[in-house]
Image 1 (tube, each protein chain N blue to C red):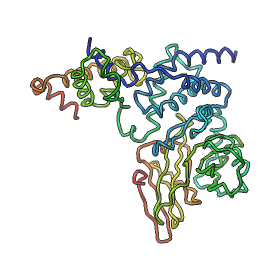
Image 2 (cartoon, each protein chain N blue to C red):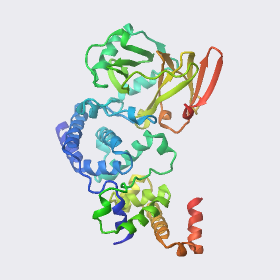
Image 3 (cartoon, chains in turn brown, green):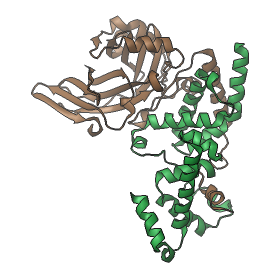
Image 4 (cartoon, rainbow over the protein chains, first blue to last red):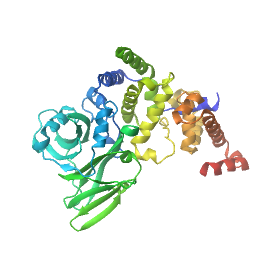
Length: 251
Length: 179
């Protein structure tokens, strides 16, 4: 037995065979990919418990948090969303985004069912063609991105009410990048204390992004991979007494 | 036309799903693996016309990039590290390598650089040829062969008894490892 053969005893996947349930989910994923309902996804760089999950897998395994991103299947949509993206978001009310909120609810992410109302929408913003929503679903929160009336991405954020950070502080709940190559985009969601009046992101390439802050949450998305990179983003927090800048890894 | 493409894709999935799942589970916690695998097949469908005839290394390469994109901690490393079977796992009792030897092997493995572990795992765990492993890492076959050779040398050195490991040659290797 040579050294490489010996090593096989350390293999964590030695003899690993998928279960019947895993095969069922995997085949369901293939069906959805072929049907064009598939969604690319990623895991956030923070809080694995709230990871992005494949929308296709989520549909097969109902209660899981799910993310659905279709840039790879609908490159035209992704291209248009990226081209129209703006560093400063427009703020939207729950009433204004009810069609998108319903789509978000229908994504199945979060595992809850039932109608959605304007008061369920905690945060809603517009950047070009894309509407980003964070809304209550069941006891928790879900995040969705809708582009041109199509569900682009969805992710369960929390299973219950999120904690409220101290008055001037912010926290990062999830930071991730989704997709591959030119289709890649980033998403950050965090918690904001009641005294926080605004949060901006500074990327290593000099881009400055104004996030949306509402209901104790803050969020932004942008074209590019930085959300999945190691600590390359600076977070500028504004409150009534001034401004503080943090590395995202500190939050 | 499209149904032939679908059929080929389903066939590819049936042929490679298990290997891809294992490849991913060797590198990320099982709870994350299914999502990564799904993302890889989504990418494969989108780029189906570009797939080489030997698709498995191509899929592994996409999986590797997907995993690297996804976790900040992994990005701090130059290589995508490989997990080990847990100490109390079944492999402890049913393999041809004795428990003591296995403990030595594991200690030696942990002492290697992640890049060495990656090269070794692609061959010893994932069962790839040097050509296929080079595809996964995006390097030339000769480059991978050199990496693998050095990794094997360091593994052997790490498995040597302490007295032998103190020889000048081993010290040189150690310095190289730390550089």
